[in-house]
Length: 311
Image 1 (cartoon, one colour):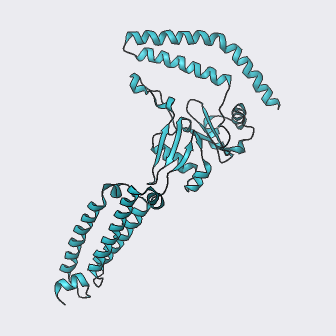
Image 2 (cartoon, helix red, strand yellow):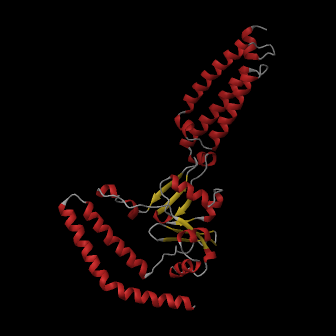
């Protein structure tokens, strides 16, 4: 058997130079296949792309370490797997049904601000996986999310609520206040005592917050998340019900107070005199309104809390 026959047909007596030539040919061949498959397959692989890549890698590695492997057949198999992957992806461009079968469908994880627990299970994800993906997408607060979708390539895309994404502090040329990592207080119907203790709150405080949002039993809560501003996001297991929203007068006062403080801060940080005067004017108006409303609202709030405690 000649030297080149031993390279392409395989031989137990393949020399070091033969392995070297095989390596060079394999490298150039794989480079050509990669260019033909295109950047999308190489950059973000779908399940079928991953299977093809693993199989091609296995075929190539056997051809490079086993001298008796039929090298020409290995190249043909690599070309076949590459061609099938290319044809499936091209076919998916013209026939969406094929692409949905091969690649899969997007899975909606959050719809209209509500976590879809059934779709989480379908995607083989738990709440920890969801929250991790949202943090990587730059959206750690569940209350700010309108839609979160698991794409076929494994990434979670996020669409924020319109009022949360229209204007940024950078647009107004002001410094944004610190936004810490939100804390999970209820997960899968269980209270996180560690997070409550860390925040200095009791279970009674949490139950009162849930009752003020119309949730009588915390075991019906899939997840409850508290942000650094004290806002509580609540999502129930029952996706047919509206997501509970806390409606307490104390929270309303706190929000108004925060707006007044923000306006004062904006006035101090604004370089334009006209904007500075406008922020100051509205901050003063809010403070005057709060002086009159605070005693009345808090009195009513205390009576409501007493009624809740007596039940």
